[in-house]
Length: 309
Image (cartoon, rainbow, N blue to C red; front, top):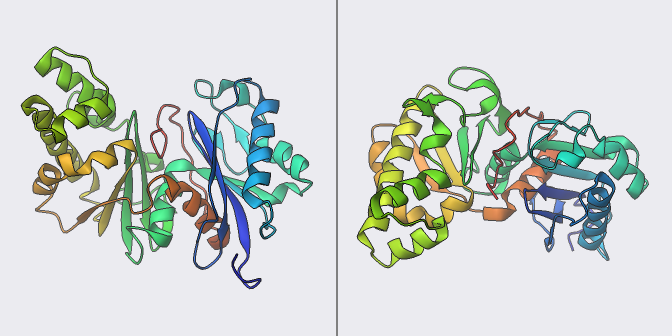
């Protein structure tokens, strides 16, 4: 455990299939052992809060007492009030005041339970203790079933300003006759592979074949890298970040697409880096948010999450 001089907070990352929780310590942003569980089979708000409370107890059992809890949640969500506005994902939480429900379970005042957008949490984690630590301007892009994004200046998430799309979200920016998410997501890779090979495969399987040198799979990932690089040139040029951090499930296959992505952004004065914290980034980011009181961002897209779970 950290010394008594290092306060801690209970941090959560709520995804589409599971929930993670841990204690995060101030200054170092070190995480105690992470507890991860699946979403409850019983799809009610009461069961959901029960799981949050249970894993929170597990994460802090026998350790230091947390000052409160900070939860990284997908949108749409009223982050200031702690009320879910999701209708498609986790619909049983719609309209539920999670701040009140969880604080009552812990026996806390409601101001000890706070929320932030999961894409913002991902970037804040990398800024606080990961691949974007120490840089002035950074963009976080999470690649998976959707595309999550966040923009930061001097360690604070921004949702408006020069070069920042509305809400800091790029997934629905018009691009090549569709939107960005059509070009750089898991379904884009699956569609490209199906078109070239006539076979339907999951992205993990396509990546496996690419590592093994299958020409079609190699070509699909190389093409994905080109599209990613071209999209980034369009999307981030005005914001002019020092670093773009790539996270989410697809970042695990970065070696397959990073060379072509780097080639496309070579004219920009920006570094592309793979997430240093991986699945722990939103948890660390929640801790960064708590201890720095970074403003919460808003989000409106139900289908995109930070870690693209």
